[in-house]
Image (cartoon, rainbow, N blue to C red; front, side, top):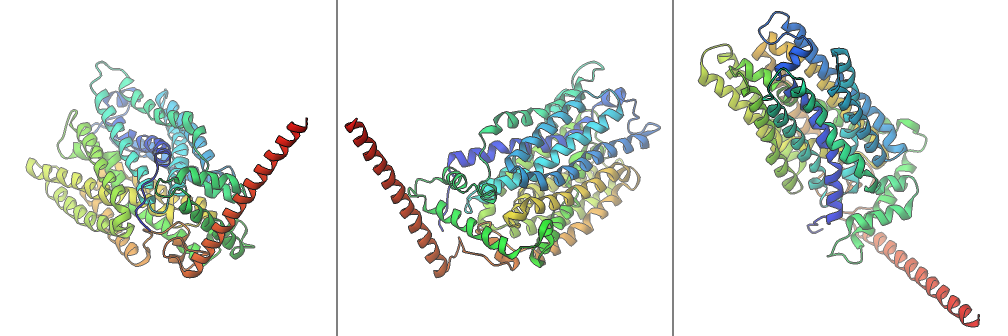
Length: 524
């Protein structure tokens, strides 16, 4: 199967829906800049670092992130039902609406209790979008370009993180004791979600979901529109893809008769997928990426940075993730998901060990060179993460589940991500304050274990259709898209002949109707 370049419409759909990805990462990271604004502490009467009562402040900061993550767990759970019942598209629309509500309430909060509740609501919307968007992107992509297309989720994640950091840095310089410096960045998380919601009626439904609803003609026409290619004027590639999806769904229904609502755990292959998806997303957060993204300001302050420098360094740090995600998207279909994940995890273990050593030696000292070295390894961390891990994790999770349980499988994986996030972001401020550099040991060990799990248990999914991937988990594939057998080719040929025959019959009937109408008009 030769290299395939997605058409403009298909690529536009994938990038546009990733506005939701940008809104999510912005909302997840906005606390990082919020806690760098002096007026935020003043408005809510919170102690700053070094002042009496700062331990209470760190508990509140942990709760702000923890409640957002708890909301996202519920959002992922809701997606497992809504995405199948109403469709992937409807789930994205609801998620955008909830995020807009939560973001608006965050910006308008008048006390800490209101702020915490608003963070939960915003997290609910984030959970629905983060779970639903890569699933939707995978299902509307061609097998040949899926790596690039789903990686747009990671690319726009990087854009959201960067926007959050730079807007927060800019508002730091607003003069006067005004709450604008923290309210405006919080309000801005609604902007990409509003754009997504406004444009969402023009998004197509997932063709796989349409087939699940027996809307066969609509599913086929959607695939034609999404995967139209100049080098395939007769849509042979799209017809093959449609036929494989249809036959695989028929086979899966036969194999899972009587499984009811527990299809995700009905077979050994599905249980392996669910466990692998949960461990993948749970373990990846224990590399510490969200700790640095959300509490980088606190890290830089502990390493001797003051004034606006912590916010500036946080902004540069997240912006550095953008080229890495673009690289990932361009080459993950060439080198493979396992190569990227294993390379990233291996490098992160080394970087975390070196960061731990630097902080153990120079944290709290007057050795400026040593502290700068610790900051260097924090930046080396994001290079390794963004080039290898960020987009790859969402891509891999979206691929390993068959269509009929993809929503549930994605939800399980994202629950893993947010369970880890709850633990790390609630404990993070307190841990950084109390055990300082030793906290990095907590990150090194899980990252090394994650490397071993991916190495021994995660199969490669590159250059396979979503249906072909089932074979990597021991399931039967009805008909192969890639590396088709002679029997597969016969089935495809027969299906294409039947399609052509139907087209000729429909054309003949249309011509016949036209002749009858002409005769009737002539006789009249």
